[in-house]
Image (cartoon, rainbow, N blue to C red; front, side, top):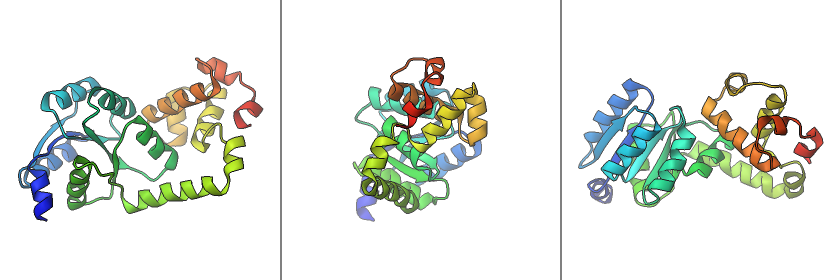
Length: 220
């Protein structure tokens, strides 16, 4: 415990939390920890980025439900590569978790975690660790094991992940990002990220061109 307290004395944290009640409550609770300096913002990604740079935040806790969360993580990773990013309130969907990791997240914290677990995750992230709740780690491990057991399947049918394939099918139907988000019960920002990956994997630059790609090419 002494090691954790010592580490906390050196940690400046910025919370980018969507819900005001959570944001204010977590700020107060974390500031009560020994020596932890916690600031919070609810502003757009540009404001979060500016605050992270101004504060020289060691850890930025990004609520994945904030608008543009994935783009924000990318900007933070590019602008402050020395900083650490903790994806907050994540679920257990592997494709989405991988998208957060690809965007620059250094660790995950699920929506059912306790305050003590959040403190531990921040300390781990600040120290260079990769905090990950057991349930999330289990999902990622299952995914890795399945890919290892079915390498041919993932090479031939895996140009798109299962979630990207779902998004692609809806793009082919002419659905908007908002409609796709509603149909798949995910955030619009997540849809935007998946569409970006689909376009890149198909080597096209527009949704129209992606929709014109033969279905067999997307799956082969």
